[in-house]
Image 1 (cartoon, helix red, strand yellow):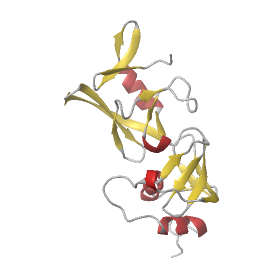
Image 2 (cartoon, helix red, strand yellow):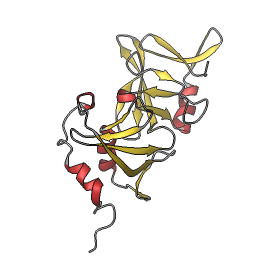
Image 3 (cartoon, one colour):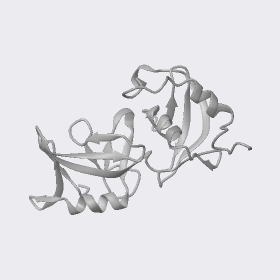
Image 4 (tube, one colour):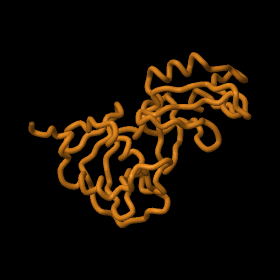
Length: 188
């Protein structure tokens, strides 16, 4: 049987994958990795959250999760896949991650906590470390959550509508309470 494009990723993609540390708990220490710029790699994160390489979808979710774990946005506004020895610039059409689910957990020290889930399966608690905000890119009027390494995840429409249904009003502003902080659900 001939391997599909997803099973036999050519060239730079294989080289990049080979330099990554073995999977372990937690995320890689991207803040410690400062390699020189290696060039551009033809990876695109599309507006709808899917990733492609050289125009073909990357179908293996494990590979997308791996690449998302080494993704950072730098001060120049560009997105890079970073390893200890290489830094490859990729293209992002809107924002790199989507929020595809959430839970409102009420048994937390700060009262209710909004916990969001990204399209790569990562869970983040909305609060001081991961605030809800309205980004310049992405769908206007739909909030996002600021994550680590300059990465932002925007709510997909279905999840956004669910969040609006859970909103409260304070001082005439619709919002959501998480860890004793009130996050408006309207740009302002």
